[in-house]
Image 1 (cartoon, rainbow, N blue to C red):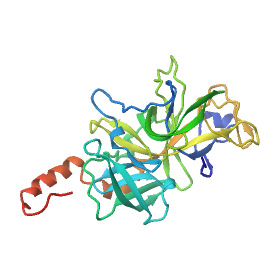
Image 2 (spheres, helix red, strand yellow):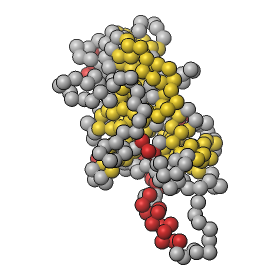
Image 3 (cartoon, helix red, strand yellow):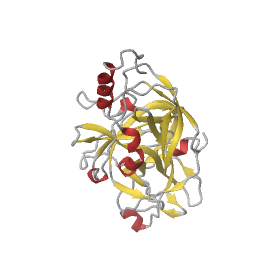
Image 4 (cartoon, rainbow, N blue to C red):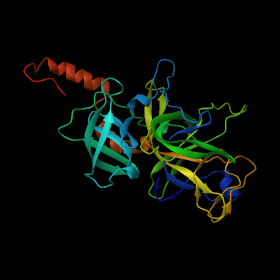
Length: 318
């Protein structure tokens, strides 16, 4: 499996002051979790609520997420990258229809966020993910559900597990917003550390980290103001280190990277140094995607119903 060029991590934490300059960050490809067998492939529920899984569609080997009746988002680095590039999303309208292929075109790119719009001859989506719009209400510590496709959890290694075989099915994990990191172009990413669950931090064994194949997947959080789970991030990348000062990238999900290296420098801290996952922060891109998100699903349905009585001579909307 060919990996994309490595990128430098933008994170800043206490460990950096102890000699960790940063880790290498590679575009993300499945969610690896502590819980055996390391990958969760059944849709989660919170009570009777589905926390976002239902809005994920298949974009080839990756994932795309409808955000409105005529648009969906994914990671820019898995697209053709040129405005006008073609793409197809396979989607079942949140489980309300059989899965269909929706021919689409890359319409907008902002950082690693790509907005694809349905071609004019395609029917509209009838169900799509609500989007978290206000960056001021998404806080550090917010719990999230992470979704993506990619690798299984591999063999145990010091501080974690290697990345295993490629997997094509959707998987999930949970995590928390640990901080917000910005790159030199002021693109904001949600950083989620792969902290090891223990008795003192009360983290679940579903604590997750990306691996190669999660790109374009999404993270969802519960917005109490709207009483629903909303899309807060589109998966971008994950930290990668080396085993020796001059070694090649070591592809592993590590809850403690102490003893590994970055740019020849030993990662050393008195506390565990977890690697992190990164997702493009949707609330900070809301001005880019807002034109594609309205009307809300309920409004869209009501508009169709209210209009139906006025256009009885027309064919049913598709």
